[in-house]
Length: 371
Image (cartoon, rainbow, N blue to C red; front, side):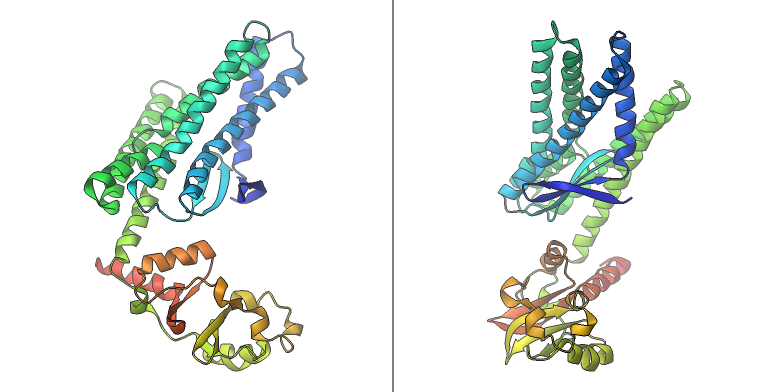
């Protein structure tokens, strides 16, 4: 489903998935009904207003849970691409895995710690207002309870939950293998997900709690899918093991001077030779890179008068790899920079280019041959 950007926190784009509106409406209506039951003397708009405020504070709590992960990730120099709220809560898209178990542990534990702190905060509001402001007291009690539940649920030791990542960090610490630790945490997460699906089915059809059971089963299915995705990512990482940038680089990227016009590059090189990028060089020194992505931003009527040097990504801004760089790190550069080619450079000289298409083809071959 489509997501809508609503702002930034700590420079991180925050978005709302279209599915979020479904759960927001359902929670708001549920809370409105509870306020109507507890406070029959209130007017309809008062019930609805408290329902909306409580619902917004709940999702604000979910957002702060994800911000907790992001703050620690940024502390360790790990970029965060975005935060998105959706039907099952929120997700912070951290661009790469931590380098050490301690980092993984702290990043994973930060979210539940924030939720637990919010739970205590809202319970404090409840105790301070329960005698004089019943509506505010109910808000504090509900939010305090739901945040503590959120913290506890996320500490279940199975991927993709935060507790699964904490568990992975501990196994990683004692085994010394990130991949082995991920296998164990994924297996734990799959067992828990299957348990939720079975329990949800029992609640729906044996205990005759249809909607509740279906919801539990649906969450279990989501967790199972996410755990399987994590397992696939580990297989992907295994397929890249032992490969360096120099093993995969090619010279299919053109080397041209910066004085060339965009029109000359497109008409005489890209359209005839099939290359998808051009290295802008001065002798054997790299000055910049130009890809189809940058070319498509330039109006066609300006191609004749625009030099490559004017629109290239300059060398100092490029993601570059050394020949000995592990190729999984090259892939990470591509993901973080949203780019398709990474130049391989040694002592300022271009040795070749690693392209995303070639890299993915290598992974496909290795996975198919189980190497």
